[in-house]
Amino acid sequence: MIVVYTKGRIVNDADAHTMETQNWLAPYLEGEYKELYSEVYSKREGGERITQMIDMAKARKTDPEARAKALENPIEGAKGWLGYGGFDKDERVEALDWLGFENQLVFPTFGLGAITKAETDDQRYAAARALNMAQQDFCDADPRLQCVAFTPLDDPDRALEEAKFAIEKGAAAVMFSAGPAGDKSPGHAAFDPFWQYLQDRQIPFMLHIGPGTKVQPSKFKNNGRERAPDLHGGGENLRFPDFLCLWYAPQEFLTAMVYDGVFQRFPDLRGGVIESGAGWVPEFLRMLDHGWYSFNRTDPYLKDMDQMPSEYIKRAIRFTPFPNEDVGRMIKDSSPELYMFSSDYPHPEGTKDPLGKFETSLEGLDEGVKDMFFRTNYDHMMFRESQAVAEAAE
Image (cartoon, rainbow, N blue to C red):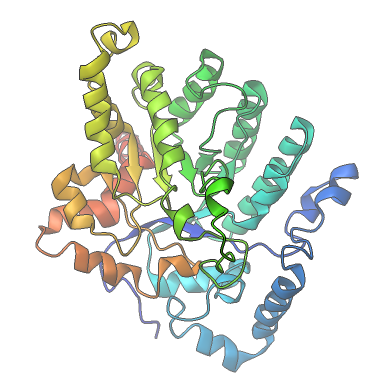
């Protein structure tokens, strides 16, 4: 009998990942791109160490004892490539049975590297197409697995083309860099067809740690000391000073979306800011409104807004706190509809008990607010309540 981690609570997971294998993209590439992106990891990026872990995880499939042990408690067990269902979709379905999540948004991890390293738009969009096909193939294993596609915004027309392709294949959300859209603001009129399409299809957009994330500027790292190891003891990931910059890019992006009128022109557009923390959100909302009060007398774009800036964010965007943040305090300091549960499975940053940590931080709040955090805020972001109404009408 499987012990379900959620213990009867209905939980949607707004952040989970694949841990891509070395040849994750290869089956979906052709010609020059197959040669260029056939391997996800280079030796410099620890490719040999990573492939050894992947081989260990693959060996588990033919070892019933090791497989049973890994499934005893996947969230407390090995993480990363060794995590149960990190790259094996059949294992992920079993892991979901144990976890008990109703839905799980699935983001890529290192597969994004081929896109961020691309030197031309042709390379960039070819890599995105391959990654989106690979991610959808993984998620097709179970309807609970909700694929997050990636489309670069560098070219408005190609961004829309890739979004349409991915959504037609089954993607439930579309992710892109939290940085500028090529040489434009995401609020540029050239992207209006893109936002219109997402709104019409009821598909949310996602900003996630990774592409576009700001880190500590390099000159600050010149401190006369040896560089410390990263969060996992290696060299590829964030360090403490970088962590304090995680929310800068999402703030810039969302400010542009508000100021350039995107949320006003597309009132039903929705999105999520994932794995960038959320303790900054209450003050961000206050500063948006403070800026409006400070500049609206002389700025015609601010004068034309039909809501306060913070109201656009509350209507359109949901955020995932880190498990060690005080979500109860955030809710009291802003609004309960803003925040969502996430496990970050199978990344170790999600901790060995994200549900328990979040439950502790929500102590003293009523069950309705807790249900918003664990279930219905996700449903809103994913347009599930409107879809349910439409199905009932039929």
